[in-house]
Image (tube, rainbow, N blue to C red; front, side, top):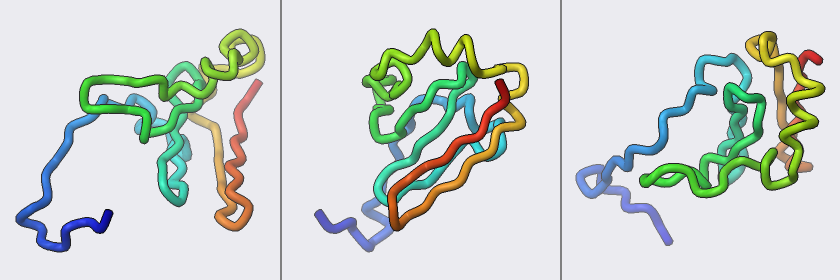
Length: 98
C-alpha cells in the first residue's frame, strides 16, 4: 500500500497516551515500528497500540517476564535508562539500573 502524497487526504488517528515519552531514550524507532519502555519497565511496540486502546503491545508480558522485571530493574531509576539500535542487525540494546 502506497501512502497518499496529498496531505489533504491524511487523517489523524489518536492512540493511547504514552507515559514513556517523559523518559529519555525510552523510545526507539525501528524500520517499521516503534519500541518503547513504559513506566513499569515493560517493553512495548507501538504497532500493537490501537485506536481503541492496547492490543497486546506488552512484549514483557507476552514473554512472561513481569516478575523478572520487578526483581531486576530499579523503576525509581528508569529515567536514567539508555538505549541504542543497530539497523543492519535489527537489534535494540537497552541499559537499565538494577
